Image 1: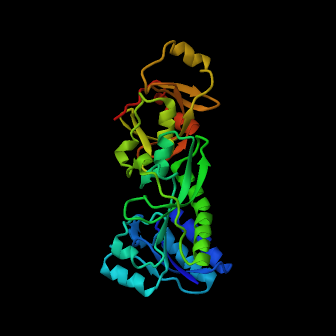
Image 2: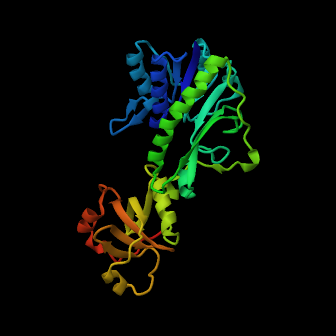
Amino acid sequence: MLRILYAGSPEAAAIPLMHLGKAEAEGKGFTIVGVLTNPPSAQGRSKALIPTPVAQAAQKLETELGRSIPVLTPEKLDAAARDAVAELQPDLLVCFAYGKIFGPKFLSLFPMGGINLHPSLLPLYRGCAPIPAAILDQQAETGVSVQKLALEMDSGNILSQITLPLAGTETADSLLLQAAEIGGKQLEDVILHAAQAGSLPEGIPQDGSKATYCQMMKKEEGCICWNDSAAAIDAKIRAFTPWPGAFTGALGTTLKIHQAKVYQQELPAHIRSAYPEAPVPGTVLGMDKAHGILVQTGDGILCITNLQWQAKKAMSWKDFMNGSPNFAGCCCSSN
């Protein structure tokens, strides 16, 4: 029986864990001997310590499988953490969005090594934010890869890879959850092969010359530049959903934009007459009563459908305009 340790932390990482738990219950030839995740974090006004979604999923699996699943939550992967892992006698490390770097001493604890689920078509978008990066770049497709864990970030041999076509409407959170659903089955297939063969396949080496990289997003990067095209701004809004969010300045305060799209229709007559020539990017042209709030960009018009004043609630564009009639005609700023 192949013994695996699953490492992950956020909500998306809980999805493959639950998938693997179901496969174990079906007698697929492996068992989850433990879970490695981040420590509980303080949340809400009460600052209560809440376990990660992966830790919560492990608790749920304990009930479904009828046995205990040790949950390890070390601050660092130091000697004490390595000792705790060694006591579980795992054969294989399975990782998705854990958030810490595995060093050689840690990886040596696993006779079969480790595998990692990465939501991109490696070697493209190595790094910690591959899904927002693909959306920002307006790619026609991305993918989900299972790779061998290597000391160099996201450089291991590819064991499985699936391409995902992009419709241009995905948000970072919706695409991540889609990748997690697909990735659970990919991980299962790779683990089953390892259980049957007694080792991981060699896999396909990545072409390092084609590698691209992405960095962790910063909150300030969510600021909208209205000189960009409507398509680029739409992509930024989707890529920065749910965090850190896209925003702009307007009427002396901050305005968060949650949903928008490139405006494809003919401008309403009242807007055409008011603006016979394209106004300054960022100008709120007015409303299309069937579609949303129209804002001029450096190339094209953005149609906003859900937005939020700072410290207020998010609302649909109709409710927003009912409460902010002076918004039409103002000019949004990029600072």
